Length: 142
Image (cartoon, rainbow, N blue to C red; front, side, top):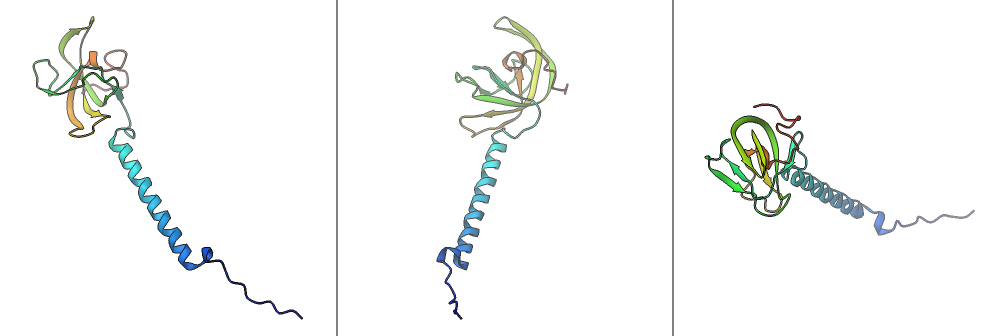
């Protein structure tokens, strides 16, 4: 008859190792939650109308060129984008050979420097919103 001696488990399988694994999984969960939060705040997780804005466009406080400028989109293409909520027929504007009276109201985000934005409840003239036609089919009238 042969006696089997108990074998020792490697340290990597003991209770201390399981605690370390749980700690690592908790950290990974926290990192994943933070990543999702960043994506949501950057506009990547928004549903509905999402569009880039033309360069050198004025984002305004009301649907007219006489209203205050909140921010100008500057010279970097596709830097600013908008989660559009709705549109109105406002001041008719002609610029760059395009004429429309459509103005989009929504939230404008800066994809490079997120602060001080996002700019909520602002207006952008339809000629500066990359939608193809005004009004865009996927946007409701305010």
